[in-house]
Length: 103
Image (cartoon, rainbow, N blue to C red; front, side):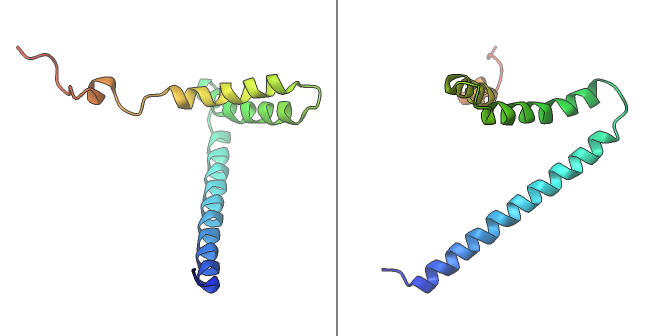
């Protein structure tokens, strides 16, 4: 059985790591918001505002009691689908073919 003092030290280390990662993430988001606000009007600025709008919409749908749970589940699945559908490697590399056909 492990020493309780050692377990607390490990948990404190993990807690510091998680809090540091969260603080860095929030700081990067704030930087991105500031940089996006400085963009000139156009497609890029609209695209930069699209993702925060999607997050706000999903949060409000999740919190609204009038929305049935099936619709909430569909929103969660739709939000996860793009990340799940993107291949991590090109299919040719996954199959071991890195060059074109031999001649």
